[in-house]
Image 1 (cartoon, one colour):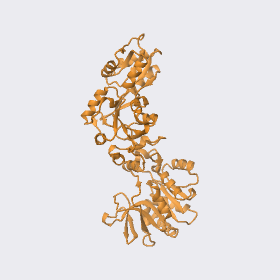
Image 2 (cartoon, helix red, strand yellow):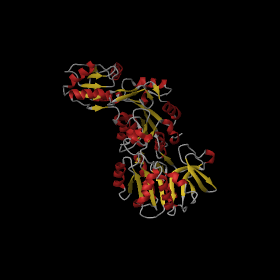
Image 3 (cartoon, helix red, strand yellow):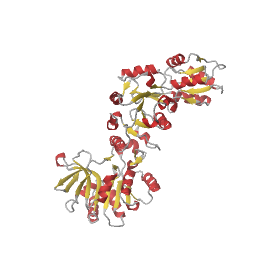
Image 4 (tube, helix red, strand yellow):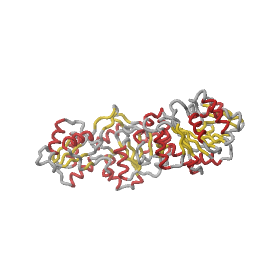
Amino acid sequence: MNVIILAAGMGSRLESITKLKPKSMIKVNGIPIIEYQILAYLKAGIPQENIMIAIGYKADQIKKYINKKYPKIKFVVNEKYLTTNNMFSFFLCLNELNDSSDLIISNGDCIYEENIIKTIVSSDLQNCIACEKCFYTEENMKIAVKGNKIVHISKEIKKEESYGVSIDLYKLSKKVIPCLKEIIRNIISKNANLWFEVAIDKLFNIFEFIPIDINGSKWIEIDDLNDLAMADIIFSNFTLFDKKCIVFDLDGTVYLGNRPIEATINFINKYSNCYDIYFMTNNTSKTPEEYVEKLRKFNIKTTINHILSPVIPLIEYLKNNNIRYVYVIGTKNFQDYIQQQFNDINFTEDRDLCQAVLVGYDTELTYEKLKTACLLLQRKEITLIATHQDMVCPTELGMIPDIGSFLKVLELTVNRNPHITFGKPNPILLKPLLNKYRPNEIVIIGDRLYTDKALADNAGIDFILVLTGETKRVDVENLEQFPKLIVKDLSYLENIVRS
């Protein structure tokens, strides 16, 4: 039995990602879409050498990846992918087949649960189409059935006439292939920009085709970002059932500036009795008490000891290292809080007394502050300390500069980088939790890869990425280690939560 996977198209509705890679190479839970199919075919007993992939857009990327892992798979390049459709790609593949075996065809933008592929490969039916019975969408190909035979396939079939949707997975006997090849030859001589199903539809009057209902098994066709968001969930095995503690990032996850993210607020309020909930932030312009009050305004009840802020390990570090003279880039609020928690601290610009320059998130930043810090840091014995290194801070109006940009000024001016930072991604921020829970009992939910995910990775904790803040779905594609789960917002977590 041979397999043809049709993967030549551009995927224009996923342009934010496909401008960088072909659609079939987009990763779902760290695995390219097309590799899900390849693995399923191999597990169903189809050897590599019997698999052929039609490629076109960014063909070299697919070839390079597949050749490295599955060197016996064959390729056919559709150089006219911009002006043709998958029928033409299929025709090119048919011309390259050297033997007349039964054939399975699938679209390269679909992911199927392995048992679906196994069922259609092992089926005794000679000609069949895998479908989801009683399911209907405008976008998918629908099939019409009389008795138990397929009589029509088209996107235009009305709901009342539809048996279900095709899942773009077809099995053809070797007897059908010469006839299909001739039908396609005649069609593309007039119009090469048509779907493969237009040709299949003409076979129903000649050969018997039977629908195979996938009966609730998982599959998805990925055409746009909404489809991709669903695929990230459907094909993840991650669950919150075994978690005891959830740590929420604040900016970009719970709120944007002064605007609450409703899906997160609703999730927290619904499940606050099921999990021990903490909130973490790198933003030191507010005290832990102020964060409690801000969350209260969003109808979230919490306490000071459930706020994880870099200022807490920072003060412990100052005390333990007997650092009592510092110069601060930070808000008056920030300085007052440090003073309250550490009575022996002194704020100074004196180069002979100063032990450290401390940089926090400063919404009251002035040129004079940067100038003073640079002059102090030209003395190597003065340590540079930072609460965190975020480059930007998300707000309801967009991104604004954060401490990382302040630190970059210092680096470019005096060639100094922080000796230590206390916020994300330093696991020291999680010290209170790691004394209470095992890492596998905790999950971190956040919107940033280089802080929230990096912190989770550094602490050996599972991470859920929400696309409500800084990170876009395209930013995840080149990660070696994917988040455990990616969701547009927390309303997508309903089915994996312990109630």
